[in-house]
Image: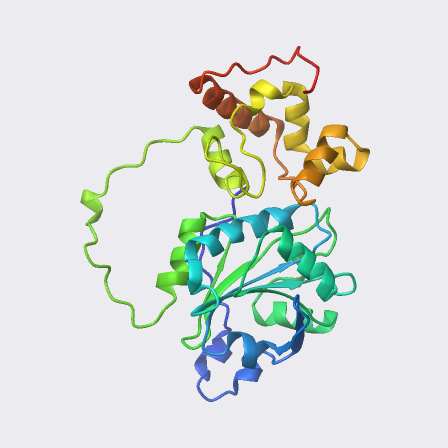
Length: 311
């Protein structure tokens, strides 16, 4: 289920009232963290002071929301281009510091082909809890259990004190616009912007198309080439429908069970696990219906559920 579009101010009324008089470390602790490159940094002084940033919390052993969340943020990273590391900075902080060594975080970042400007970080558990608390996140809703892991993304401009909580599953275009335009102070009206009456209506999306654009697009395309995962053009013609249904619904279990094709794909794509998106069976059916229609339009014939052999 998509998270709400609500924008939340993540500074308490007390902090807001005397923000100018209180030292920065009272609002954001200047704890020490270690980057995936093995460097020691201070959270306030080195990472967020006077910067526009995104901050989210992950752990590398997650087979569920974290890979999907990171893939979506990678799409944001790509949209922002060389601004990341120059005037925008991205940080992913581990909630599993006992396992997530700098080496583990580096391997995780490399799977997503992350470049400069995006750091993966670890800190002591008590310090991670403190950061989550200062960002106004509900500690009871944040777990390091892969089967019970909620997600959180905070975007902000530390200099202006403007902080926004969003879903990392929002459109990469929307998230990139918030980071690249909305959070910068001294903004001016966009030149040549049209009024709402002049903007054409977007074509309606089917339920399956909406699911693909919001849940799959970060890693896959249909006919546009490979990304973090394979291009899916022709997938319904190549693969058995029953196998596809289960692969979309519970890929983590199929890898765990040693399904031959699941393991082949896992190894082929840098051991970047297909995340369990927690889709209902009806949603899987809608998604497959959309992909089948794309294949038909390309002149490819989807395989029927009776064709049990997997190529």
